[in-house]
Length: 226
Image (cartoon, rainbow, N blue to C red):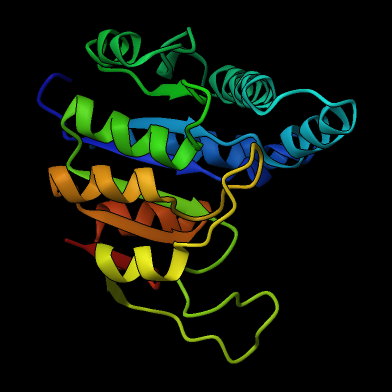
């Protein structure tokens, strides 16, 4: 197990918004991947986190506290995935980078959520990829990759097959940095990817798409290059 390449996978919080069938499908996919690589998974907070954050913001809660609330939801999502993985997963949710490193030494599938207030789970995943020496960072989202505009509102949006970190910063420079407002990539994640030259791909969060990208390199997503 010690010789397996580590692959960091950021899963959209949308995965955890259903009744559990989706989680089972992702657990099965991760179990298959674990025969070849060591997945280190970061669970997003999704709609549940945004729901709690939205209500609490209306009560006047500060942004740092809202971030912590989102982190707690993402860690609950991580616990759901660990439960679905069973013995294939490290049983505890790491709470910081050192705990991630210690857990990764087990050789099992690692599942965590957010780690620090002020950081998106995308930035957290990039930092984890840097810390554990991951061979690749796979950012699985609710769209097919990075577009020149939002494909959910612009049907003519163009999908990038490849994009540089500099181009990403130009596209995402005005991104909302409030708790619960992160999407795709943010400036912190891009800086980490750039400084450690982490091979990164943004793709649609579907088990077959993720599996194909990791095991065969075939994907319709967007490669981020330094």
